[in-house]
Every structure is written in C-alpha cells, then in structure tokens.
Image (tube, rainbow over all chains, first blue to last red; front, side, top):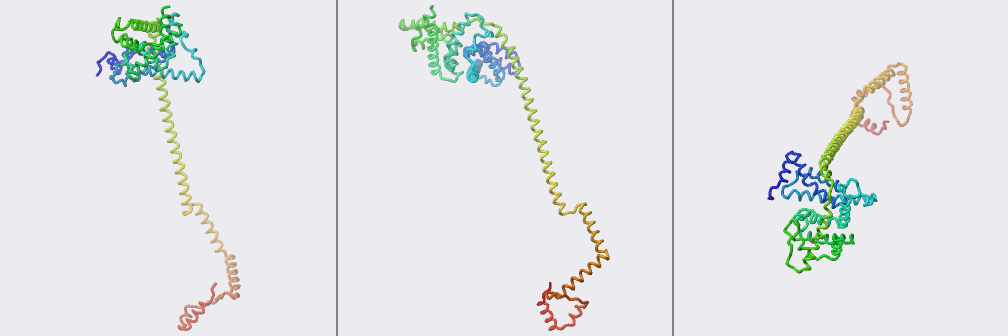
Length: 184
Length: 212
C-alpha cells in the first residue's frame, strides 16, 4: 500500500464534506494543470477552459479515487485526457467552421502573460510544440517540463517505459531541430 | 547569439548514446554528474544538450499575472453553481416530462378502456335487444295486438272473411285435383261401424288420394 500522503488526507476530508479541502487541492495543482494544458493547446483561452473542466471532473470524481496511486498522477491523467479531447474538439470545430488557427492564441488580451518579451518566448515555444504529434507532445511535456519519471509517465499514460524513452528522444530531437530552424 | 549557435548545432542528428546519458541524469531524478568517463567530444555534446534543454525550459519561464490563479477557484465555484442549477432544472424538466407522459399515457389508456368498454356494452345491448324486446317493442307489439283484435272482433270483417273463405272452398271443391269433404258427419262414429275389410279398403283408397 502506498505511503500515506497529505493529498490523501485532503481527499478524505473533502469526501467527508469539508469543501475547503477541495480548495486546497485545487490551489496546489491548478498551476500544473494550467501549464500542461497551455503547452498542449498553445494558448491561454483553451488552457483556461481545460483547467475549469479538470477541476469540475476532479470535484465530481474524487469520490471514485481509490487511494492506490498518487493524486497528482490521477490529476495528470485527467488533465491529459481532457487536453487531448479538447484539442480534437477544437480541430473538428475549426474544420466545420473554417476558422483560422491564428484567430486564437497569445494575441488575446485575456492572456496572463503581459510582458511582450515573455509573450514572444512563449509564442516561439508554442509554435514548436504544436508541430509535435499530440501523443508525442504529451510525453515531451511530462518529461521535460513537468519533470516526471518514466515510471510516473507510464502510470499516467499506460505506455511502457521503453516506448516512452524512445518517444521522448524523438520528440526532443524534433523540438531542438525546429528551434534551430526557427532561429536559423 | 549564443542561443542561435547552440540550436543550429542541434539541427544535426542527435546522438542517442549522449541523449541517454543526459536522460538518465535528468534533473530531479539523480544528481547530474559534472563529468562522465568518456571521450572529450562526448562530454561537449552532453554539455550542449544540457544547454539546449535549459534554453527550451527558459522559454517557458515567464512572468505571469498571478491574479489569474487567484481567480480560478471563485470562477470554478461559479461554474459549479451554474452547472448544478442547470442540472436541477434539467432534472426537473426530465421528471416533469416523465410524469406528464405517464399521466398522458394513463389518460389515454383510461379513455381507450372506457371506449372499449362502452363499445362492448353497446354490442352486448344490441345482442340483448334482439333477444329481449325493449319497452318500445312492447308498445309496438301491444298496439299490433290491439289492431288485430279490432279486426277479429269487427262483425263486418268477420262476415267478409267467412264469405271469402266459403268462396275459396267452393272453388276448390270444383277442382279435379282436390277432394273437399264438406259435411258434418261424425267420422269417428262411422269408422267404428266399419269392419276390417271395409276399413282396409278405405285406408287403401286414402293412400291413393292426393290431399292438397
């Protein structure tokens, strides 16, 4: 049985009716959820929608949490599933309404990054990340930015460690080459 | 620019072996060794790889408006409330529609049963009416009886009937095909006076006689 961690206690308290425990959990993980979603989708508005969706799922499904895996793994799994589903929905929506991808993104005033230089940096990163296939992007983000171990990523994605390593290597190579091309 | 130079270097294919070394000593997992036992070129490659990774990470470290994260929870609570409210209304609409449908179904079933029952009763009544005369039929029969009685008791009509009957009988008596016995003889008395041979003859003659 996994070691008892503070998250479990918060979950139990929430399940016993203590709403403030949920707030604590949300505050603890909201930034991680946001940044993962942001890097997956490439823009703030979509990421914000995913954060709200994930919190809602968390609120409704915490009663199903089995205390067998760590809570953050569980939250990541929800975030990844929601992000990929969201991207698919957006693609379909764009295809149906013939919207341009450029219509959404960092240019919006709602963006939380106000500094122009930072915006440029993020734009560059996003434009590169968006060129990776979704599944590969997901693994790259989990490994490179969220700094999760392969075992943790395997737990989240359900893939083998060997497959994940190979995927990460190819993603890394592609990202570095794309960055080089953008700068060259 | 240092970044540009670094990244241009990495347009060439990455060395999997060097990458594995970098990946095995990934920050947060194990302490990254400053030097590893290998050729100097490999050491340089590893350093470059680490720098590229750092550059990538630095692109993501940006200053953000912290208000956004402060507002996530209040907005979530608001959304949750909206969702719960809409869920309540949906549930209400759903249960009302179910109740309404059930009520409609009951009304229709009741109406159908009533119609069915009425038609059955009507059908039964019609059958009964053919067997049992109704009050109107009684009146009709009574008036018909009264009419026939008035005819029978009427002396003029009686006389007319007798006359017509006598005429018909006399006309029939003239016919060759029929024998009309018109007397007031006591046949039982006559038959008792006949002996067996005579009775046999009469019987034989009667057998040959065509009666109507």
